[in-house]
Image (cartoon, rainbow, N blue to C red; front, side, top):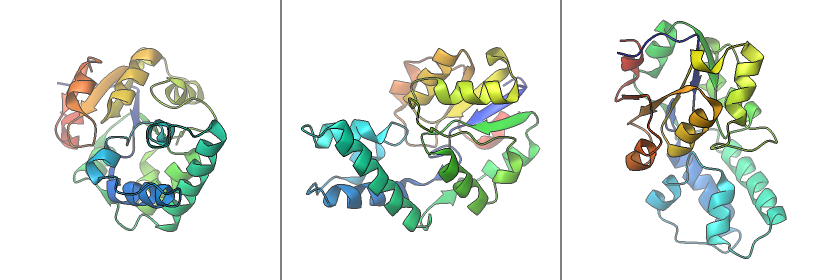
Length: 210
């Protein structure tokens, strides 16, 4: 049984919404413009939840930080232009958010602006007290995105549960000192998550309420 927490932080991609098709298509187009083709869907999915710079470094080993920033801006433009056409809310997520007590915020590698757009589009924004993305500071597994919500909402780390689907979520949570919950329906590698010893595991959103 998962105890009640004062604050719940949710990753978005792979946790609240199944957005892999839109993310992978946008990444594939951005990299194709750089002459990189033939990247498989499973390979691209393995980077969801990580900063895209990790992918750029791997497929473009001679690229610079300036190249990465340019590619990231191009990816974001393509991603937003798709208008989340292939993205869906995972079954059970909205009823869980509606019934779950406590404060709620996000901890995502998306920018705060993009995160708000996604939550608004799918009718989830009303369930959140704050929306926090990665805005000009280190992304997960660094703890910064978590610490921003804790500070904004005035909650101590031990009173917070981070819910995510990938190893960077679990590592960021550990470094921030919050409790962590790994979900099994997302894109992350379970063995990689297990290495960070999540406090809880769930296989459906409803289990957060039990």
